[in-house]
Image 1 (tube, helix red, strand yellow):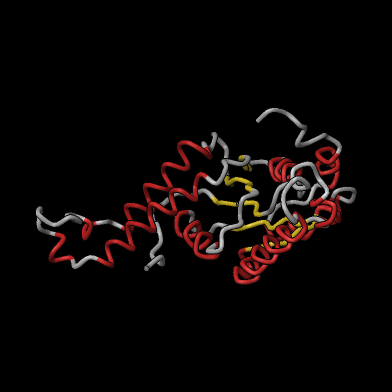
Image 2 (image 1 turned 120 degrees about the vertical axis):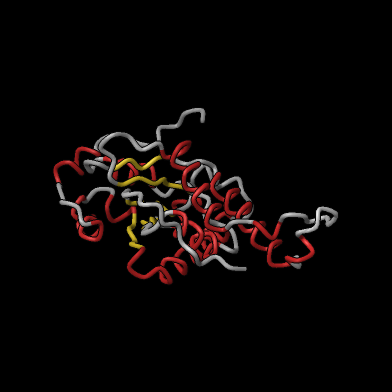
Length: 228
């Protein structure tokens, strides 16, 4: 399966995605990112873009599987699949996500979303797809002390919550390592009470570090329990 060609449509936006798991402090991190002038990082979408990845992947898999000469015949059960346009698919996914989920506003320089559902076994391939759809995309990887996360109401009713979290975190961190400079790691327990712990993140983003602004954001309650 080919997932290497990139979209090139001249869009000047930059993209940042927050990669983490539930109850890691990611809503607070989203608030910190959105305190940067020109940033618009949206919240979770229940892995909606993953469905678009499956659409794209299915098109490529079936195109590669079916003899293109046979698929040109209107009597063939896979008639037309040979014409699946990879570049058009990537452009269409990008446009759909921008128009429906991200919705950049006037003055937006950087957009993206935070999500807590980065748990699929083929995570690396999904992230590769995101980087094709959103050229230059970067990923902020947020972690937290796992026993504290496992004890939260979100996790403690699940079977072996700590074991699940360890698997998810290991998978995320492996992808982050493979991304190299396209990923940056932060740890909630480090920055929750110390804005200075985020100085490296701002350097990586190429943004001015404003400790007072970050402290004001940290002082505001985030992820207040409410009906979704």
